[in-house]
Length: 403
Image 1 (cartoon, rainbow, N blue to C red):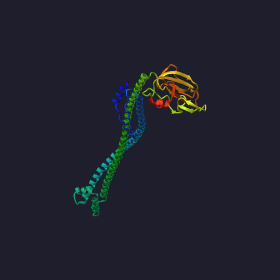
Image 2 (image 1 turned 45 degrees about the vertical axis):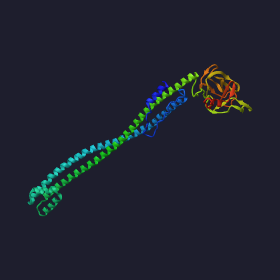
Image 3 (image 1 turned 135 degrees about the vertical axis):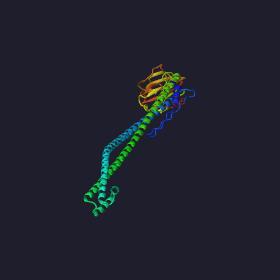
Image 4 (image 1 turned 90 degrees about the vertical axis):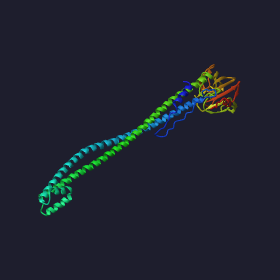
């Protein structure tokens, strides 16, 4: 995939929006691919592509962490919904069971009222006949309509000798039947109200829990959708990184030949080693021989024995072997009268042979402490037309900061 097609793919995909419900997560910004004045892909392009991938991967990982939290919330709210649903089911079952009882109670109340109405009517008719003061209908209306007045009437009739003990007992029994019927009806009504309240409360609790569970499930689904979007974006960015790196490597190959790799300046020079700078080029008091002596190069330390040493520029290997105080040593002819040297290589750490062409940034050796050395480091040398020069400003002039 060429760089042009990759960029077109990324533009077509667009920047997918990210909004996370469970905590603020911000989508990373992505720098557009840049080129140098010649339109070539630069190492900065490769680094930017990698940074985009890393940023998106970090966001994907963050989303996964939020997903785990949301899944726990979903489990909790669903368990709560289940518990409240169970409570609702039990309340409904209790309501149904009680409803049967209430219905039976209501039937008993209805039957009792019917019986009481008949008994009171009978008592009224009997008393009317005995009182000889009016029609049966008059007494029946009084007895059925107002038990208080009926009782007062009975008292007066009893005092007047117009009612017998038997008729009084008939009325008292009828009145008691009426009271019992009303009591049963009131009990049934109260039971219905209580059961209805319990049912409503259970239904409300279930609805609340179900709403919470649905909200959590919705949040989880949104997070999963966002993760899928980010994963798709990550795939595109990974393809962009791979294509950008491939384009960069192809340019390095075309410009500097096989082996070119890593960060290479526009002029084709690369950092020979990573680490901090040790002793500088120039006269120094030698730490081993204890006299003043020219230090022929720039020491680069700190990465330890076995760290990689890279060719500072494309060239041909003209020496690869032991060289006195320099220990195991490689020298490259970089063309234009310039040679570069790499000293104190670990035993077995020379990775090239005489006559081999190397590219800038190619791994040619491993750091060691052979020769006149007090610890593992690279001794880097530069010669111009055979004369030593300070590597630090030389490399700086070519776009490379040592160390």
